[in-house]
Image (cartoon, rainbow over all chains, first blue to last red):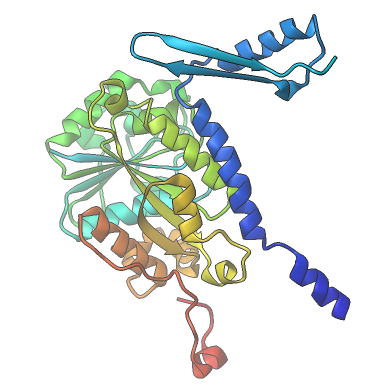
Length: 83
Length: 272
């Protein structure tokens, strides 16, 4: 009985888990707001090209499009493995 | 000139139609000439919730395609003066709605009404996008539950990019958060997102909070919008919501656990 109570107390309240998960996913969704529809495809294809030369993880590539006054800057960050 | 308000959510089953029916009824009860339009072509339900399903003759698609006049399709509410329903078509496919057609219908209604409510279908497809396209304001209906909150955020993204106001760089659509099916005792026990959590994540103004209530099912069973059940918690919460929509300052209710008296606990049935 004591053990059960102990376990119960240790468990994180489910609502705070929900909040943390939502904050992450919503931030991700917002970062993609307003970006062109071709971005996910571009990201996938760039990853394929890079993989022809070096093996990288799915999340080793970060791509973002920043709009400035009269041009857009496509920023590409690839983390290459050591060696 | 009418104000166009879309009732939307992304996710299905969170209470869009219940809210559209309750808010439009509330506006009419406050003397505003109001029409509520069902945009859920193929799956109309607003007529059932409003209790006028047997009086549907023509619908939105008939009007758009020129098979009926607007006055033939509008259904006058039996309970409240100043309230009209424009039902969705039950049979045709969603492509029957066109942007030009919807624009024309709204234009005709605008001169005659104070408020036009657009009851959006679930999802982010054509019907949902057309329901929001011409909106001046949006009521984003959200349940305290992860998938609903996430979808509401997606809808907020669309309101900021895929509406006439966004495309023509006018003042943005005014966004309101309406939390429904809120259960204060589950919030207290830590198993439900709090209203502050939801407001913080979505970062929009809270228009209203509707508690999880037995009155809602009772209302839909009878085809009487829950606003008419003025003794119920949900009915009062929708009346508050309507007052805030009209610019009044109304304190929030029903967000804390109601303590029942001993007698209430012994003899009281469910919450009203």
